[in-house]
Length: 358
Image 1: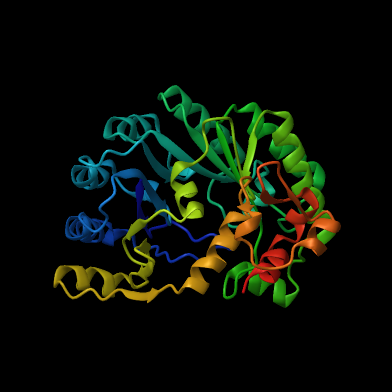
Image 2: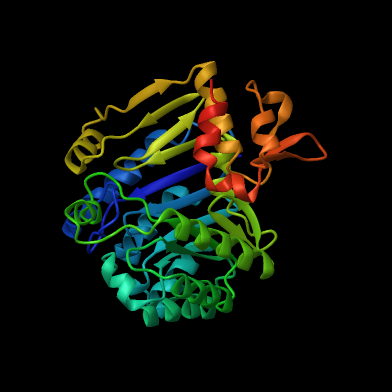
């Protein structure tokens, strides 16, 4: 089963930590969505497998008016998808908008909350507050959404373990089905990184960040969530099918400016430029860059992605020596012969993966 990712690059305001391709020129939404529909029509036969998942991400897809999403939906309705996700910002949510998404067929929401602390939200440049975040989840539940994911971030500047504990509790109390949680990354060129380099803010120390992650894992387990990927937790049966496709090496096509695709061991990507994308689609000359993955590339990706999941990788598939990592309780072998990271190993997972690559 394959998937489709649709990138909506529009944001009313850029978050200070974000390095994804985005733009605040909202008046170009209509022409952009026309190009997206055309690309979908052009590429609908690219994957022979049935389409199981569709994911509308960004950017901030919820900046789109419902009528533009309806236009998109006319093209993707024929796909037999079991999971249809859209990312939304709490500041955009209204009851009418949520009911409109339900009518279109979207059956899963990913709500970008990040924190329930107003001062932290302001620090990272989010445009909603804690009250709006809580209300967005409640309105989505009232509108009939039974598969809701929320994003949370930790290791934010000035964030304390106590604040993080409170955020986790609030998230659990909201009775959502899925939580994605990421430690703040200071990406090159972002405003937050510039503030760090200038000394305006300080990064959370590694010990505190690890403590926040361990607390998250502990609290999620106690609440009945399955820790099925390094940064993702779900109630049983609510694991993200779309994201799991990425980790399992399932083919997918990416639609929109900057979107990536993976089909027949070829990775390709659209230009991260609004004009280049729209003009290329309109005149039929859109040039996607691509790379053919070698056996070495595919092996390394299998290591990188597989070890991020609770399923791990069969030991017989790993070419490197594992004894050091096993003896130091960084990975363990399951009864069915899989290698998975331990809680200690999750703290240095990138290092372990790098050592196991060829």
